[in-house]
Length: 328
Image (tube, rainbow, N blue to C red; front, side, top):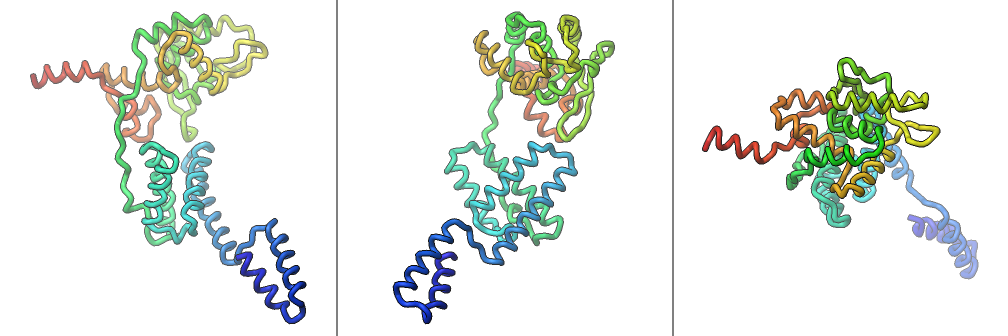
């Protein structure tokens, strides 16, 4: 584009310049244009149109209750795909997306789960464009879900949970471990809790989950006792349920909780101590003890039951027992 423009200018000025002047003009224009990005008017219009479509899609997702973090992930994923394919959104075809997903996985050596997340976001975007009549048909429609290997993810054993409680010198950390293991709350929900949110009489509290949706979660008697001991030991006025140990006792952040649990895991030599692992452990324990999957779905705050099923791993010993009871 730039070289073509320079050639047109030099050619137009040729009758008025000698060879030395023409060469000087060409070099000067080249040096000037190096500092700028030159686009045709059609490209500028297409870029503005693409940005408008992406913004409209994100606005629709925001209305549906998607979090700022999710919206940012959607935006980044779509922009990277568009830049890699090198076409306007309305011109992107199924083959373009297939090649992109293949090269994206191979180039970054990503797992199939990660690549399928990209496919899912692009599918959501192009399906929305189709529903809103911006395009005739979604190019992702013929790209099916990428088959992934289902791995049995780790949960905490009863022994590990007791080891963490016994190995935590701080009342706060014991209360935090109990709260995670009995309620199954997300770490992002935990950090938003205040003292006044806790209903000790009914052993429950209201948490603000994904999509700004509130739900009630419940905790056991042990958690109640340890929470009360921790709160009674505090001298600060911070309304937050969990705060830093040192003054000025600020509300604990997600990173703060994750860091504290990692240190505890290293100290006790427990593999991968992480907040989300408590959630998975609670779900597995609930299923193992016979809780209906629909009730567990509500307790965990999942919109789709498929998500709940991914969290809940039935213990193999129970499968063996059930086989002997019903079949063998």
